[in-house]
Image (cartoon, rainbow, N blue to C red; front, side, top):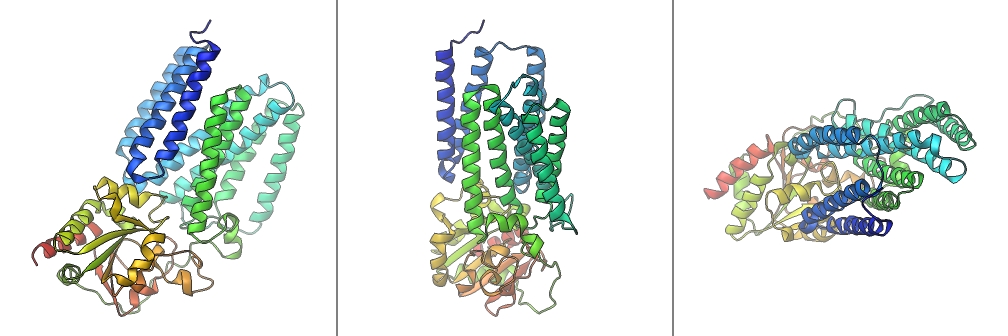
Length: 457
């Protein structure tokens, strides 16, 4: 006997689904993102409570023990992870979701009967395994446990095709009544397919693939809802799958590339990972004091944050610098590229953490027309998203990617640790232009020196 009637269970599931939808709505803006996360978490709590009260569960000690162990591992990791490692954390969480869906499908196969339920099991097994293995590779690339460059070898397209054909054939056999052993084979084929799918992806394309794999996980969870007869899993999985798909397309558009080009571009040399060689051309470098003079006596300054700012944890210093300039009457904005950093919204979250006003965060479409009115564009740890090669150099790995029009500012200042290329692995010719000045050093230390000099003007 259960504590909740079917009617109350359905109402709680509906409330949970509404919370998930409101959470997605809240995540549309940095101003409401925190509330959106809280609403989504509350919806998840409602869902878990509804399951415990509406289903006759066996092995409750094992279930509670698993929840306790998972919470004991996840909570400290999530609290201690650095902002620079947030994409890796997202990749891991996403992979765990896909893997869990695949394991549930594997365990439910003996109870699946015939027809469409077995088809749902096969779909969940395959897609969940692809998501798990692919997410593990994206984590390894972002964590630099392996090369971030595309891994391509002779015969890879043929091997991918053979694995896909074998998976389809094995899946068909399972649907037609195949044994659990065949289902395990399908699971292994899915893992291999996930690895092969992500290996050829390199450079700035990796965060986009994380979003795509997130959509895969959502679809796997939705299919597992069909297997288990759970409407809420279908709704939640569909929401994740749809939002992940929309985000993937938006990020691909921001890179000026197609999803197919991102996944398979390395086969024809189109991946965003070029040469890592450093040019020996001369550049104009400067001191923090000279940069402070440029900024302090400007009328309009646009700050372009990038991954280097996140690595140095310099967001608070950047916010202080902006405030100090505004106190001198300088008009200051932050220009946000859609794929700056390592995931969508990375810079928004970073600067929101430093209490930068939301109205000062300008998206690319809004700010690009304003660079020509800027006295100084201060680029802090960004590279690829301001590289003119995206517009001028056909054949460049980032050619066609929309960029921030930093080159139109009267003066450009780059804060860089070294002359190493950005994540895409290509040089930025803007650094060698006569209006460009470089200030070398750790972004936070450089910003601190510039801030002190501005205050001393």
